[in-house]
Length: 392
Image (cartoon, rainbow, N blue to C red; front, side, top):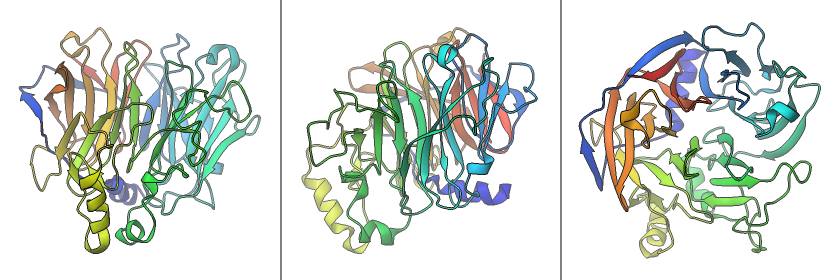
């Protein structure tokens, strides 16, 4: 099963190398192995002062690492709700409400049993906040029907504005579907290929924030915050500035890092990285759209696939802007990596629209996610079972 999952998750997608970036020598960073986990794909903290890391495992468990040992009881067990690990299905993400200590609210995303739908659900933790019974409280916020069991995206995170953000991929992997359907990620009447922004405090299951960019557009879904993504597997907010970074997994050539603006169109499937996407046969229409468009946002950084650049990769894994204290050399740098090559980079804007990209580590990890603890220190998850911390 693990070998199957590893093989299928490589399809998280494509591309990597660099362009319009300055490259410099590596910084003195290492990885400290902390513990083993089972198919870890995400981790986060609860903002409760406990120092706990909540590790999301693909097959449906969320477990608690207290810094020295695993809590014996899983924090929540969602395996009964989960689809089998077909394609890129599984448990994707976890987000704690900013007032979790007071209200115990938490949100999860996963591929649903039998249907394969992308589901976002709210649950409540027990009074001592040590665990959650999924059957005791559940509210389904939304369900999305995928076209194929791939490119779910599926990350959840609360922004500094208090709203819940959700990334959704185009759910397409085959060329046939890209040709048969209108470009899903460019269609404002669907959630596919987009970043959503929801107010989970003003209504059940949610309300629409009044300043969402498409609220006044009757031809668009009001939940949309940005669109034009292929597989936005990981995004994060800079805890110091509020800047929103999103890594979009590419197709055949480029992997990209985007700095998100409200209402922004990031180009897929007409655009991949800095270039127009080159689809076979009747994809010419997509290329023509790209070549005449003036409204696509450009990524702040991108790198090529390994067949084009041996320093690249194959599926970008977004991370965080480092704001901890243990690694002063990388404070203010956005740290990210690659699923296929195991490389880890640091990215920083050194002048307006001029970004410095430095390779930190060339590892053998199968990186599925980075994690940020409450103190701002960063961790790396290896699909083969490891939890690591970035260390001097």
